[in-house]
Figure (cartoon, helix red, strand yellow):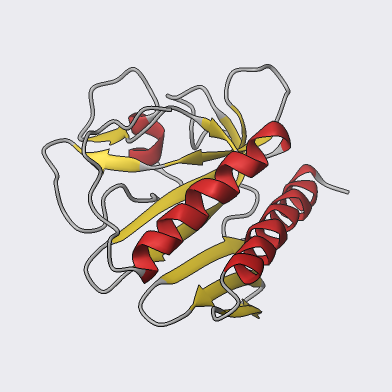
Length: 184
């Protein structure tokens, strides 16, 4: 099995756990899982709030895409939560972020310098902005929080964080963070 295929299997397990927990704690939520162009998409949507997570969106990312950040990113996806008044999202990267061959899924959100708007923190596509935001170079995009590992010991924190965001969205209380960058 390729590293990319292994990454997708790990993320699918994380998504299955998150959406199973949502189903348990919010049985009124309409949970759906389907594919679009080979990308697995999970959705939860009761009345006002929406949660969406992809698995397999960005496969086999080119080796030097995150060269300035000195990350080796194999694949990437996104998670997004929205309410009628606010949206926030994060990139999910399967990467070695300096551990020399130790790959894991991480959650990374971004914000533009001087930017306070709906949709911040946000996810970025693999490329220049995501690379430079994670580097020591001055750039107009920055990391919205420290790197968060979301597999292994980080699964429960990830699930709790996004279930909380989803609950706030459903209640119409999802808001812009009080401070950026956010603490761990």
